[in-house]
Length: 425
Image (cartoon, rainbow, N blue to C red; front, side, top):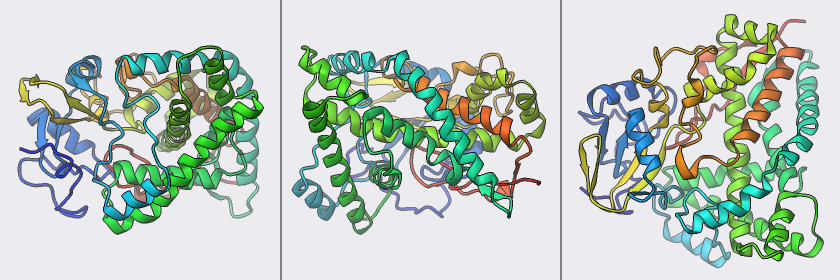
């Protein structure tokens, strides 16, 4: 067994090859429909070592929740580490470009994590959410109106709605240029590819350039906040530092580096998956159209059934065990939240989508324990507004060829490339 970075992330079988015997159909980078394999793993091998990635794959709810909770044994330090080691050319580009970004919170451990989270949490105030809500709603209305004005009556809910809404929201929240959506999306795509993808050395090169630009922008935003202040989250963090909070400029920039990705990428996917799953079930969609107060509960069911993140990593700091399987110190784990969220020992008929499910909120899509997602309320607020306005302005939307929707290939994120829709005049 090897859990070194030389092994982790390599995929000698390729995307198109079948899983090795004994892996129950599990393909680590394929996201089209991983759930059949997840069910097989839960039933037959809930803790499985996958030699292709160098990761122990954990698939049952109770085991995953216990690992999340035990941060002293299972470190988050590898959560943002590249699945595949960066090649020499990419390393050179990033070193020469001054790339020193580190995780904002998700890969940090106490006491550092505790210290930084305490400062950042104070900046995520209800006042900021309340101030953003009408802005988010107007943005959704404008984008929907633009799509619905097309004579051909065809659209793509990813490109026409979900792509822009969370990006503009997070850029506004941190004080970045909200007109540069495509630039920030390009940087975020590169971060996802470089961290959770399986790129060759040559394929990494353009993404390395993008990450240098991305990090330099984060540093610039901190400098601007020092020089000009402002009414945004970056300025709040700088002001907290000036008032004595223990957080450095590099740590603030690292928080921005994480927020600019996590603050919109997963929410874009949440909105896309919510509309994709609901429109595929007209009887449940019609319930929300008739009674929009049901939307928050429906969002929790979407998070359970079709979460944006289906797998997250941890590292064992000592010899231990998970689900009765011995885990050696230094071993790395992949926690399949997308599997845990359908575990029928926790969710009755877990493979079924049901917006009235009573315990949907117990999903693990935001993690659990000290690293529980800090931006969960903002993500759910944006999804709620998007569903409310689609239900109000376009209740008759219909999915177009839902079986043809492709999903990006990576280890952790289940992202639909498109959600094509049509509507009647």
